Length: 482
Picture (cartoon, rainbow, N blue to C red):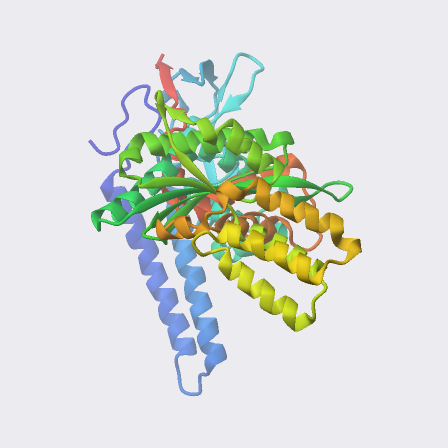
């Protein structure tokens, strides 16, 4: 029956009649106030400023109704008498005993503003920490409800959101202002609970794109990329290399979607390598039979090449060898042609014309060999600037070393990407647009939650990841009702 509490329960069902009574009283009052506001503003001679004030006033009134309703509902969930609640509870393997009186928790952030929650508390031992089981049941963490956590997390992960701007937007949206410390705690908590669910949700998202491409009989390519991007580190403002990776689904050369990974600066980027490999293997296990090919598109940097040699070149999934094709980014290969062009003793127009021709030539059948012959012929015919000899030799060594990864005509014919533009863009979206605003400097601990949340948001998996994180929160267990 509504409203009845079984001995030893943590929460009760609120009687429908009580809810209806509360709403009828508040709605009647709201209707009266809205009528007065409308009569005051909506009259002859009104202008845009009056309409703006009218809209804002309605928003305030409706938000206050929602805030007070939420506060009343949450405060009505526990039995009114503390003695009706369990004597002991268990949480995370620890026992807690009930305290004598309920205590208020002020300034609990919701999507509609702050509420005060008066709830029973339990203590571990005689002097241990205390918890409020009602808050655990409701999912309240760091002084915020799940709805508020969702709102704050999305804002923290949005491009251009400095700490001050986050606080401003949250205040505009909820009518309540939070402090920097609470914002940081919420961000850290969200990253901690969402990261364990990230991979499963990203796999599901990739599966959806692969399935959508397969239904139309399209050739599906899975493209893996990674790169580094500088990040300003506190307190001295020196720069270290953060790392970003992407996995994209292509259907007949058209990108269906991309999931993102990002990690704070770390020697050899081991965390990113581990996360990327785990995600890639999970996708292959689930949808490997539907993939036409898997390609690894990157520049020829030290870490990018080491990841190819140590992991992808001999990747095995469940004992089966997975064939992955490496593609050296076309843009970085073209830069070596620019180096040669700058060193040749040519006029400006000759340089431009030759560079345009060999860049196009590199994309044609047998392009690499034709380009190298053109370079040799131009050097023999026109000569090079002696000051640029070392740069030219380095460019030629690069082209020779990575020759087998530059068959761009073949790659394009299969619908594979030949450039690492996706991961280059990811570096800008995840790091530059959020963590490299004017004057920003970060500790590793401060940057980590932002990068985690932003990569989840950009992967289009925020909703699914957040829901899984809420479901996975530890439960409170009733141990004794006596």
